Image 1: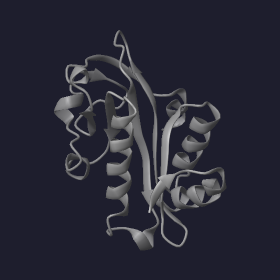
Image 2: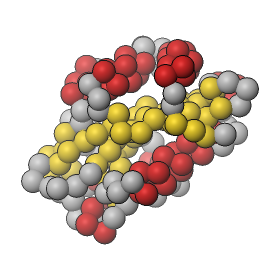
Image 3: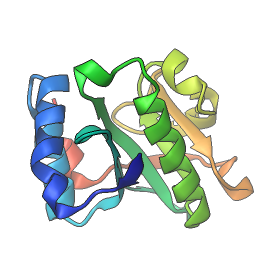
Image 4: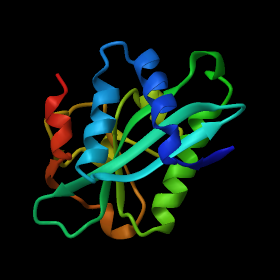
Length: 162
C-alpha cells in the first residue's frame, strides 16, 4: 500500500534512509527539507510497517514560471527491494504531482533505473545545476515544461550534501 507520510512515520523513514545511505546525509536532508517547508510530497510504502520512502522537494528555474520538484531520496528496506516497492512509490508520486499541477520532476540517478519512468537526460540537458551531467534527468508533466532551460535551484538543504 502506498500512502502519504504521517508524522508517526518519521522514525521508520529515518531508519530506512540510514540503512540505505550509510553516510546519513539523506536522513538529514529529509529532516532539513521538512524543517524548511520545502517538501512537496512524501510517500511511504507500507506492508506490515513502513518499508519504503520517496520524497519530492521544491525546485525553481531562473526566469521560468514552472512548478518543479526534485525526486530525492528514494529508499526501500533491504528485505523489500526488487519487489516493485520503489517503482510503485515513484509511479504514485509522479501521478500525484501531475494531478496537483506540477510541471517538471528532476532526478539525479542511474539513467537505466529512472528511464523506465519517463525520465531522460535529454529533458534536463538545458538545466544548469551543481549536478548537471548524464545522471541529471527530468520528466515533463506538462507541455510548457518540455522546453525548460536555465539555472535550476534545489532547496537550500541540498547544499549540505557533499
